Image (cartoon, rainbow, N blue to C red; front, side, top):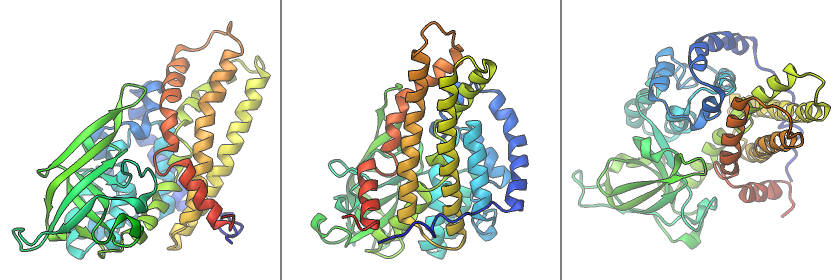
Length: 391
């Protein structure tokens, strides 16, 4: 049975990481000034290649990657501060998000030296964008049941390689990405579960790859279906060891599930609502109490996220703890627009800032996806229950 007492021990951002915050805020002033709140609320759904290139030019992509591969060679604490400030400002981070957060660290830890030298520097410059292929139809977040299959290809130009067939779904920004890193079966059958799974790199412009965007309630599309029909891949498309994909994915998910993005998806809305209440201080005590409760939950979750960052700094891979933060954080993120809408609706005669209403409308429509991306609520709760010895 897992105890979370040691995992979530008090952890503090070091002074050098905090000092980095002022530089980020200054850089973001120009970007945020051009965007109204309802646009900034898109943040990590906001795809902006120019912004990602600007971050790359500052040396802020691949912040924890060694300099020999084009990275910043800084700590996970520095990256926590950077991500926190980007999301708090509502900066458009979607273009580089997956590559910076997951793909580059994965390639660093499991890729060959040739893969590191060829692929990681472009990520750090903001010139190569990645998506991850995990979920499949009728599988959801049950990653061990994937059916997409890559088989050895003896007819390839180098006498090796792979032929890939299958399908992925809920793949974020596949329609804008250059590459996908996918979890596929390279041996055995779906009933073998974790055995026989591997990770492969797919050029999304390769023949046989079809990407179909999925529109959400806002009329926008950031999720996709991706189909593979006899896609030929080179031998060096394999990342890490064949059959080790399950272990690699679980290490990768600690990066995906534990960061500030699992707390701050609704923060722009929360900020402008707080400003609205401040201008009318004392006029709506119930709303002010509700704001305090939401902020208290966010503060506690932030402390937990910082603690997990400390574990990453120490070289650990706290997968279970990251799942807990993701589940609690997602719940708070989804509660935020619902609570704000309820309190605004309680006083229909109140004159509400139109920009607040526009931002609320967007977040209300997109927030159901918060508990889909990065693992569904049901899967995460199952992981947590097993970790606590409850199932």
